Image 1 (spheres, helix red, strand yellow):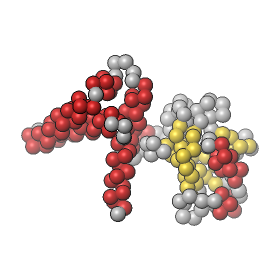
Image 2 (image 1 turned 60 degrees about the vertical axis):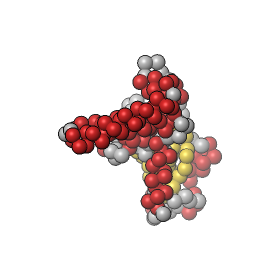
Image 3 (image 1 turned 90 degrees about the horizontal axis):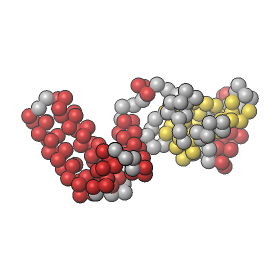
Image 4 (image 1 turned 45 degrees about the vertical axis):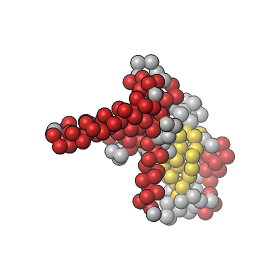
Length: 203
């Protein structure tokens, strides 16, 4: 839920509250830090996620040294108003180790892989790297990508009735990949599909 900064329960943490940062595009949990009122206010006004560093005893904007800023998308609080969830878009790795997340990727929800794939395809659309299969598909046009979706759909259906479970899983993965490319070839994304599913669930 969105909130007013002065409505948070600052008394519980002596003026500091924990803040979890989540990638707004993939759902990946990036890091956890602490914020005070000034940090949240600066986050809102600057658009870059800022914490209160307990070791430095000052406000600290993530990326101020590395350039790997976290661009604010939205901020939310929990039901007790004593912790903050920040949705952001990272500019480079979040962790000081050079990793995308401060948490081990093996603990991420498995469903995050779909949005990670979506983000990867979106990057291929923007950069069109040479030698990339996705680049070649996109350059062949929507009709060719749509044809591949049809082919992979048939192969998935055939695997379901005539092959083992491993073949079915592999064909279904190929189908999801090509469907994601098709969505981006039409200027949309897999996130749009997931949003529609959410709308249907919440009706």
